[in-house]
Amino acid sequence: MFRVSTIFVVICMALIAASLGLILYAVAGIDGSQSAIVALAALTFMILYNAVSMRLGERPKIGNQIADLSQGTADLARQVGDFGRRLSAIEGRLVSATSASQDRLKAMHDEISELGGLVNQLAEAVASHDDQLADGIIAAQAPVPPPVPVAPAAAPSHRAVAEPVVSTAALPEDDYLDIDAPETTVADALVDIIKDAIDANRIDIYLQPIVTLPQRKVRFYEAVTRLRDGNEKIIAAEDFIAPAEAAGLMGRIDHSVILRSVQVLRRLMVRNKDVGVFCNIAPATLANPASFAQCLDFLDANRAVAASFVLEFKQSAFDRLGPVEREHLAALAQRGYRFSLDHVEDLRIEPRELADRGVRFIKVSAALLLDQKQGAGADIHAADLSDLLGRFGIDLIAERIEGERAVVDLLDYNVRFGQGFLFAAPKPLRPETASASQGDPTSPAVPGKPKQEVPVVAPKIEPRRVDPPRASGNAALARRAVRPH
Image 1: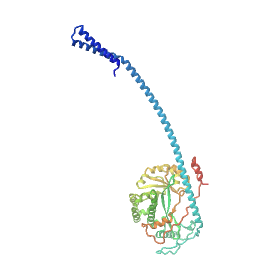
Image 2: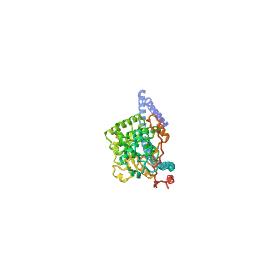
Image 3: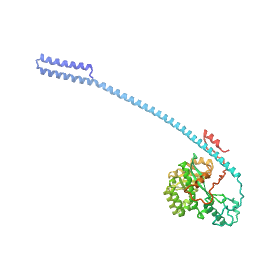
């Protein structure tokens, strides 16, 4: 907007130009049009002169304004820099405070988790002590049979036995050495007992849990096989496997065990979909086409539980499998079944090769994992074995854990699963479970009398004093509360 002074100057210049034109017209006698042109030229000259003079007068002011603007910009930049430094300092303090609070929260979370684990351990210890007390009372009330050879209660109708048949698993070692019969006679007698147990369906399934570490939550069960003779004496697997393989009976035993284990797994999955069952299978069953075909038909019909049913082999037997056995394993892997290796004695493992063959679990004894001398001869340190196997989809399970100190050391090795008498001993199926399996429509016909579960006393393990790991706060108090005296 024009200022008042500018308007006044313009009016004055117009008056001066008009006066000049009138003077030229009236005094000098110049024509009116020429006088108007002169007046207009004078007005134009004055306007130009005024504009140039004003522009020249404003140059110092523009320079001062530019200088002021530059100074203001510099002040603004300094203020922005100062604000940035203050903001960085505030962010640093916030990060430090957040990190400290997270560390405190993590420490509290770890201590609470440890307390929860110790409470679970205390509850399991109390329950285990109650079971041991109950088993001790039953064992004390039961009469002790004299350590003499005993003939089977009922001999098979198709085989006449003149001499008494002796169960080597039921006799003490001294009595076994005093037997005058030749070794072949004892082996034949044991084979007869095994045949009778198979025919009478006296094949029992014991379950031992496999727990997660350090939570000790049951994740899997291992099905352990036991046989009973005519006098209800229990024969362990290590006592009957070799004679049964020599007599060609392992196929029938494995088929019965696989059938029972799948039935148990289906009942367990009704309550917990994440549970699984490990079932041992003998290499002789894989090598026998007839026995394997029978087992494969049943496993193919139960392919829905393949992801939770793990077939287990010894490491030594798995490494010696021939072309026929490898082909049968591939057939099982194609149907979704996974494999496990136990009784591992050599830590020089090729995880890629095992993963390609369908192995998803490897069981290593806690003593072997924690043995520094054994680890020195391996290609990889035992502490890195779990991570190495995990990169190929294989989980490491520490078995035969018997002490708390071993659990603490295994946690440093990133071992996720554990199995052993520290957590629970193998226990037989409950009577209602056994009766349910007999009533299953897929179960084979059971000759003779119905199967009855026999309670077994878990082996006693002498308590050993375990040095607790270092802890502080409530966790240390809880650990001292559950420490054995």
